[in-house]
Length: 337
Image 1: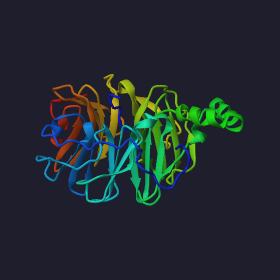
Image 2: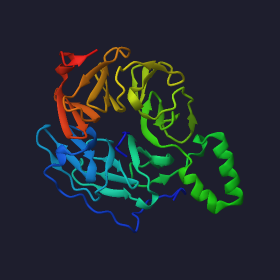
Image 3: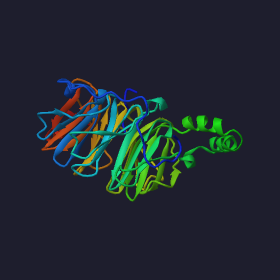
């Protein structure tokens, strides 16, 4: 998940809150406004962003706006296959599509929580959405039913003891307090045979692929992490002010890499032998050897939120809409060491 200009009881099926969402309005300028994430569903590009905008394109040139039942800022999108996908957003919004992204339905919408969902990961029928203050929604049946879980094993020890006392002696206070005790979960991703969550204040945790048993990984950085990605035998962890770290032992230890620019890294993406890190101020850091970091700069200096390769181009979701760059540009004079 992304650095966007920004009940806790197990249940089987979510329902929409009494405060019903308002559908996204069709806009001719949707492809030029803030977009936060972009991915592929089969051979179709799909991007999500502000005001509930979800855009589709089969050629990267013409963009069609999907039918979306919410008008909140959408933060991430991921697909199981070319038909079934999920998107997250503010107001604890979770959407699902079964027709390749043309039409979406609400799986969860809880503005009263005042918490955004920030990222979603689909691993077969296992779908996990994470967000602010430890918000954690999971489905084991491709979105047919959901569980809303509080990951108390990810609390620091003092907070865990405090909540345990409240749970025993003041259960009402316990329910209120625990809603804001966990850090923001910014990104969830598969790393080898495990799941990792990266979050605020140096938070990093890992689990098996079921996402049911989590443990904290201590790091030496105390700023926020926004992205973790696995590349071959290496792992990269990215965050505020251009901070980028590399691990070669499945996240047990981390080495700082020099990006040379203090631009917050919003997300990461790997294609063939190149790993891209999309950052603010128009920066795209990239490496082809997992060690040396290069920097490509957009002329307009707009924040780059996410990217995906399609038909020889790197398509970007940015604060100024869709942009594309020929892959050959990353070896031109515009890319600098």
